[in-house]
Image (cartoon, rainbow, N blue to C red):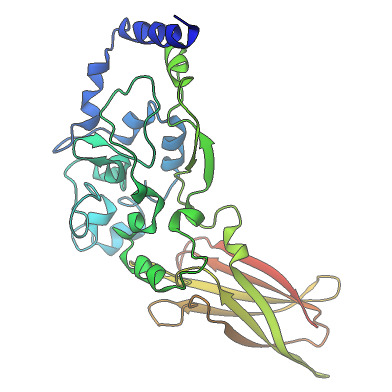
Length: 325
C-alpha cells in the first residue's frame, strides 16, 4: 500500500472519529419549508460564500429599492426571481418558503433532484452530501436567463460571432478547489481535491475592466471655430446586450463628456442620460453619435459612463480619453 492510498484512508478514519459524522450533513440537501443557509454551505465552500455575500444576488430580496418597488413584497410579480426556490423548474422560478432574506442563494442555482449540482465533477475524497455529475448549463448564458429574461433575449439577438457569455463578464475566472479547509482534518481532505478553472461568485459590474474592451469611444466631424469646437462623440456598444439593460426598476446610464486642455485641465462638461424604458439604450454593434460643443482650446475628451440609482452613488463602468485630431 502506497502513501497515495494510505493517506486517504487515514483522512477518512480521522473524519469518522470526529463527534460529527458525515451523516450529519444530510440537512444540506433537505429542502422545503426549511432549508440550509448560505452560511451552512460556506462552512466548506469558504471562498465562494465570501464572494456571494458581497454580491447583488445576496441582497436581491432585501435591497431597499426592491422592497419599496414591491410595496414591502406585496406585489408578487418579481418575487420568484429575488428569492427563487430553484432554477430547475419549467417557466420562471417560484418563490421559496424559507430564508427569503438570503436572496438568490446557493440552493437556488445548485440544487436539483435531491443533490447539489455544478459545472464540474466532484474530485473530493469524501462528499458530505449527494453530488450530481457536472452540467454544461453552468457555462452558458441560459443559466442566467432563467431570471434575467429580458437581458437573455437581448443576448440571443446579439451577433453570435465572438459573443461572450454572462459568465465571461460577470464571473471572473479563478483556479481553486471547490472547498477550502478550515481545520487540520479538512485541510487534509481538501488537499486531495483537484484544482479547476472556475468562476467567482461576486457577479459584479464591471469586472476586471472587461467592459473597457467592448465599449469604445471615438470622435468624428471635428469643426474648429474661433468661439467653439464642435464634434461628435461616438460610442459603440460591443456587449451582447443593451446598455443599460435589466428587467426591473429604473435602468439608466449617464454619459459624461469632459473637455480637456492640452495639459488635461477640465474645460467644460456635456452630459446626457440613456434610459432603457425610453428606448434609447446603446444597441449592440450600433454606433451612437453625441454632438457636443466645447471651448476652442479642447485637446481631448474624457468619456465616462456611469450607472446607479437616481439617488444613490454612481459606479463608473467605462472611461476613455479620446484625443481631438
